[in-house]
Amino acid sequence: MAIDLGHLLASFGGGIIGAAIGGVNAFVMTGMLVLVGVAAGFFGQPQAAAILNSVAFGPVIAPHIAFAGGAAALAYASAKGLDVNGKDATVPLAKLNRPDVLIVGGVFGVLGYLLNSFWVSIALKTDTIALTIILSNMLARALFWKEGPFGTLPDDLKEKGFAGQFVVREGRCWLPWQKDFMQLFVIGLGFGLPAGFVAIATGKPVLAFGIAGAYLVIGQKPGFPVVHHVMLPAALAAQATGSVLMGGVFGVLGALFGELAARLFFNHGKSVIDPPSVAIAILTTIILFM
Image 1 (cartoon, rainbow, N blue to C red):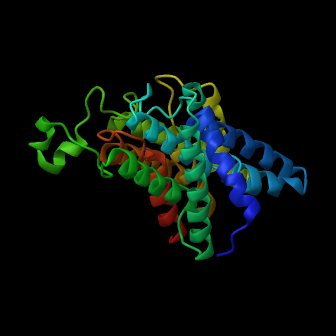
Image 2 (cartoon, rainbow, N blue to C red):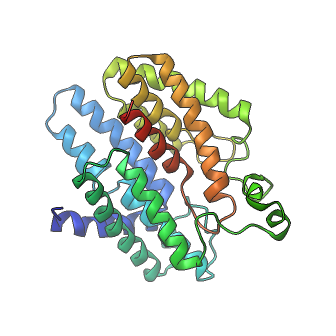
């Protein structure tokens, strides 16, 4: 696995950026840059690949670097007792005026770069960025909260055994407006079908991911659907099969897997383990083996 020093140094900065502005805000920038890169590509600009590969998905603002770095810094800050919610990745941590928090983001940015580079070097058949985010999030929780990937159930839910993991209640829910089966089905279908159409019409499934990420610039508020784990698998499946309908099927699967991951890893934990990344990693693997 070749390590580029420039990428390594930029990844440290990218992790600091993610911590400073907030992991979700960094992710929104990724979505916007994806749109710019895809648009440039349609006009034949050679810079398009650089925008996508070196900026949007590179060491500057890529999710496995900036979002994961921001999530790790948030876990660290909350474990230190600072005034932040360890699962609210929208918070810009620069407000804490704690350089150590930002440095944690930088360290995890470097970790994200190294992990993803390794997966790519062995041609692992999955979404390597999503996989890297999952592992980075789990490591941050274990290091700073001494907590496992499933979190910690309250005493009344422990009595239910592993079934308690799937109980949703106020304060232990990822997206309250996006947790019930029919709501997930309709959102998955409604966003998955257009994502599939976009992939087939343009030949660029990543465009659907960019749309889903960029629109969060207006949607970081209660009630707004989170759908990048719906639209990306939908677009990939539609491109692989040539079927918009398959986009709808995988959109529904993305919505369902996202909520399943939330109940397993997010709801009962003290820090972020990103449900969309879990859904994307699983479904991309399935699509690549179809």
